[in-house]
Length: 233
Image 1 (cartoon, rainbow, N blue to C red):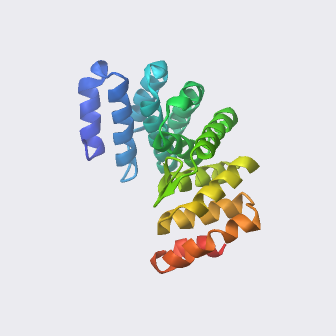
Image 2: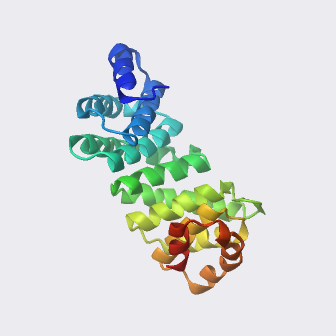
Image 3: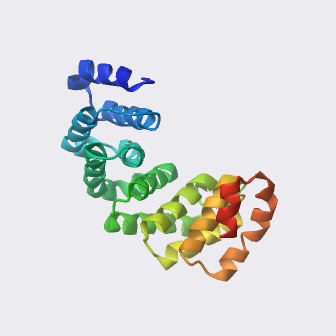
């Protein structure tokens, strides 16, 4: 629950020897939260990252997803050795998470992909297996209800699309699958802006893009200037 880096540093100094994998994932999340607000000490980032890497095989898929998402934020928020430490965490996460993908929730799949893409850390094997998992779920359950399809909410679909577009992984089957899913559910305005940009970046078929026009028209008045720019682009 630490709200400042100083509070987090003191908690870490006092309780580090007692931390298990769940605590370490929580510390990474707290580091990400405070890193977005201001400077953090690279030494503490390094200590936490090294401990996460050392014990990475103890982490379940939920903790792995949370750690990846947090490491992506840290990598984007700070430069220098601190960012390098976050990148090392993601390198450690990739092979362990790959084996756990069938047990991952939709949110965990989205968080994993976002963390690597946000940090610009390539993980082609993980992204390939993750894409297969997403497609399998979308193919096995095409039912759409409101903002969900195949078990994925609109935000999760847009996070996945953004991640694959950002990391440069071009998988035609996934692009088409995400486009079909996006066209069959109700996307919120932020999810719509991210999805349209991502599918455009991944060179989705024109027909798939046309399928998003009604939804984009519905939410256009809610879009931020950046969101409008993404849709127009």
